Amino acid sequence: MVDLLLVTLASGLAGFVDAIVGGGGLVLVPALFTVFPGAPPATLFGTNKAASVWGTAWAARLYARRVQMNWSTLGPAALAAFLGAAGGAWLVMQVPTTGLRRALPFILLAVLLYTLARKDLGRVHAPTLSRHAERWIGVAIGAVIGFYDGFFGPGTGSFFVFLMVRWLGYDFLHASAGAKLLNVATNVAALCLFVGTGHVMWLVAACMAAANVLGSYFGTRMALRRGAGFVRGVFIVVVSVLIVRTGYDAWRL
Image (cartoon, rainbow, N blue to C red; front, top):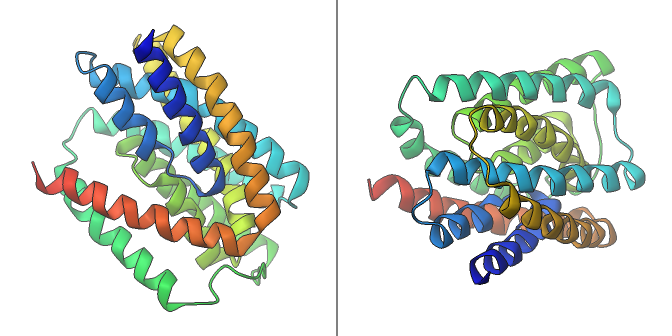
């Protein structure tokens, strides 16, 4: 019972962080591995997806009601993200991820430095691309980061946000809203694989899902109330923590 309470609380905090800018896995995945050290990693990842997909979907719904979503771009991008994640999940069963694991902290560091150097980045929502160009760049973002999520995963939400800000001209609030939709697609793709192979602890996932939705609700409300500048600040903090965490995981191997 205590174990279930701990991961449920962690799931609520993860939903709160994830709803603002992504990165909820930084909270929830380590909690699952700590509380259930004897469980197979695939089962813990599957349980994480089974819980977090609900909070992400709830956040996407709340954002869609308050933020103007460009569905002609985000719809195809979400489909590409789903297919990319499915392909990445298949490939991860065929090849090791050691090289990507060690490169990831440096990639995230480049993202952080670029964001810090561009003080105005993502503060104003100003898409400049034509509808056709934005759609195809959105599809490319969905496919590439979706594949990454299926293949490896850490920082997926942050990568979605950053690329939408950098390449589509979105502010951080609109980018976070769009990222939630694409993240739902990648989570569903991965979850299909985990469910099909029996790697979900359903009772644990159900309790965590309820807490994740609640945390997501408060996180989304705060992001909508505080705006793009606040989301940008949280993005910087989350990416900084990701650099430390992924660097530690990579170089202790």
